[in-house]
Length: 200
Image 1 (cartoon, one colour):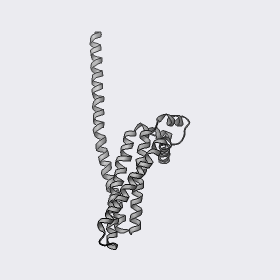
Image 2: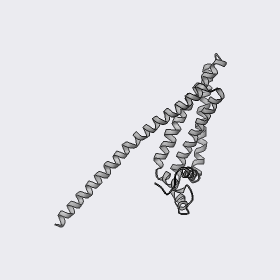
Image 3: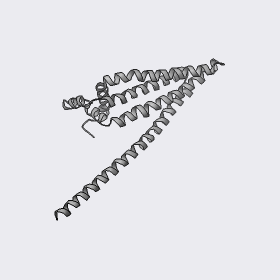
Image 4: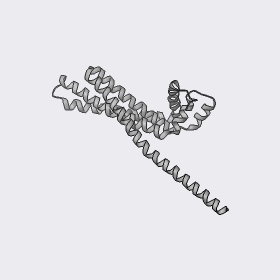
């Protein structure tokens, strides 16, 4: 009888382990599909907004839109690095003292892989790509005033955008690592404005 009970328990545990492994595998496949869908939607929104601004606005507005996109790319890349580098210990201590934003910060750190992927890979890369398209639109605007120098204008604008994006991200990475807790807490405070931390 004891042997039969043991075998039943072992089978039950094995079935549970298989179901858990199956659930984990399904989650692994669901996340890339979710990221792909989010990327598609955000890319369409950003591209539409940039196209609307650059097509109907003047040169100054188009340049401002591209600068904003570059800044957004740098900011979200900084958040992604900070969440990955952040130690959860100080945030847990802050949550015990009921510091606003700390509970959201803990959630961000616990889901660091997903948060980093969305911030750095999805939003950061989309802004980089769309800002490049905006730069091309700016170059096209300048073609009419500076005819005969289209190639030079295009190269200069692309080089400036690339250097600003890469240089800005490189400069902010060190800040994100050294001040990761402050950055994550700031993001947590931002989220706490829209949703109570006590609610899931």
